[in-house]
Image (tube, rainbow over all chains, first blue to last red; front, top):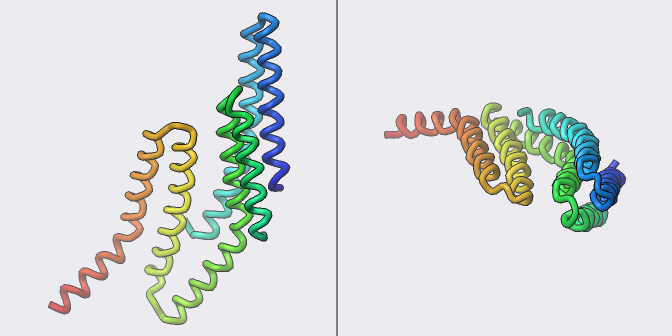
Length: 64
Length: 127
């Protein structure tokens, strides 16, 4: 909880950035785009899970 | 949660977001969102205690229950709209940020409507 979440997302971002650079350099632009999309989907899943946790807390706290 | 942890996490999140900004800016947005969530979650339990004490004080002053819940709901709404519009502005989407703020103001007005009506009724009775 907390810092390791940030490091997870940052690590995925860096890995995907390196991979897509690698793929674009070796001439496979389409696969680079696909890896970027895959990394984005994974990151969005993590963010979505955290959003639901936060919004439940807010709903219970403020009675929204 | 001590302020030291909070500031440390905020700085770490900023550094990660800046590192990711050059290659892939969508991940920088994800990192800034996650940092925001983590910070909000860290202070949510302290906020819960504060809100409970505020509710107790207001009920002891026998202020009407609808006004207390209106005040706390307004706080929650502005809290969330501020969070969403700031992260949208951070990502460069100024238009979305403004729309969120407008929607937040409308929600606040809806929440405040009964209080305003009650105030106007009392004023009418005075005249």
